[in-house]
Amino acid sequence: MYKIFVIFFVSFALAGCSSMVKTKIVKDHRLSEYESVQFIECMKGAENIYLDNHTSKIYVTDLSGVLYLLDKDENDSIKIIKSLKLGKCATGITQGKDGYLYVNASEYGEEGWLKYGGAVYKVDKELKSYKEVTGLFKGINGLCTDDRGNLYFAIGDLEFFFPDGAIYKMSYNQKLKKYNPPELYIDKLGSANGLFYSNYYKALILTETFSKVSMVNLDTKAIKKVFDKSKLIEGFDDVCVDSKGRFWVAEPTGGFIKMFDPKNQKLTRYHMDGVGVASSCRTRINNSKEYLYITEREIEKKNDGRGLIVISIDELENR
Image (tube, rainbow, N blue to C red; front, side, top):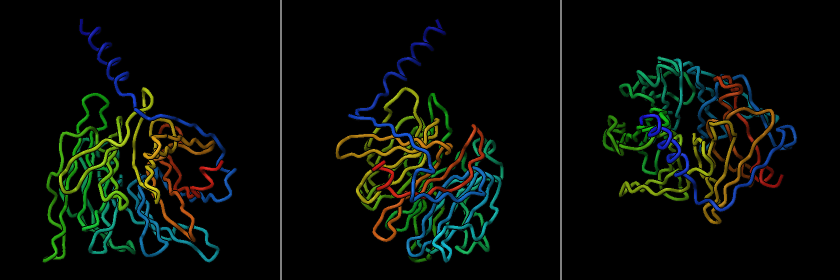
């Protein structure tokens, strides 16, 4: 009876999670076919991205616990110019209202990160110093800042069945010019993973690892589903929103990157030969062109991703 119940439950869970997405398009190309692409290597399991709003600087975390600072050289090529070891595993990154970077990191490595947890670290933007500013949270992951300067981070257990996750908030204290300790913001989520504050929607965008992308109203905490699974086994890692209001999501279950356009309810998947599994994505406009920045976390089912991929969204779509 138990086996029959499990088989029924699994079949129901997988079959019952189909999306209302109208169309799915799959595009396969080699990375070398793209003229606009830059691939910055020398990282180990590249994980998350922060793009500085006022300069060309880029910050990337990796699963060996290193935070990297990248910038353009005189030839307009992006290079790693500095790095800082924070622990044995680093995930979410953002900039706070106080001008410092905030990074989720763990001293326990990726395995211990789920069991024992990680903390939020405050880091100066030149990567000269850092300090731990919170206690430990198991499975701490995505991190972002809203337009009021408040910080949010996600926690999740990465369980496929009965996943458990939450979002915590660190309010910015205007009087003291510093962040208050974390408070539970929303609980009883699935395995919360990526977090992104969208100026386009004025909302918090959340991914749950095995199920969907949602939008959170910061005033009411109301959660609205954006889109969910379009196939039986699908993953949702970090997320961002481009200048047209489209959702870009890193695909951790063997794919690369996918884009959902809510205006026509279409989902486009992009697979690139020669590139492993993506972990995070962000967009930036340079010289009137919008570029997608993607971290490569895995190549062969281990955290050996090499680094950061930068590619023109126009070229990606027009292939």
